[in-house]
Amino acid sequence: MKRLLPLALFAAFAAPVSAEPDAPVIAELMAGVAELGQVNGVALACGYPDLVTKARAMMILRAPKTRRFGEAYETASTEAYTRQGTSGEACPEAVVLNLKLEMTDLRLKEIAAKAGVQ
Image (cartoon, rainbow, N blue to C red; front, side, top):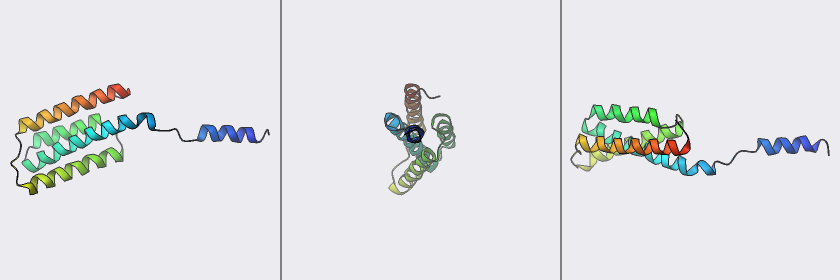
C-alpha cells in the first residue's frame, strides 16, 4: 500500500489538465486572428502596404505566439489574397479595411482582458 500511494499521487498530479475552460477564449482568439489574416490578404492583393504592416503588427501584438495561431493567420491571409485576385471583385477602399482592422483589434483586446492575458 505504501508503494501505491506515491504512484497514485504522481498519476493524479501528472494527469493532463483539461483545456475546456479556455476553449471558448481560444476559439474567439482564433476567429480574431483569422479576421486579421483576411484583411491582410485583401490588403496585399489590393496594394495597401500600410494596412499589411498594420495587420501584421496587430497579429504580433495581440495573438498568442504559437504555431497554431501563426498558421491560422497565414492560411486566412492566403485564402483572402487568392479569393480577391480571382474573384474579379473591386478592391474595398483602404478606409473600410482599416476600420475592420480597428474593430478586430478592439475585439482582441476585450478577449485578452476577459482571459486575463496581456
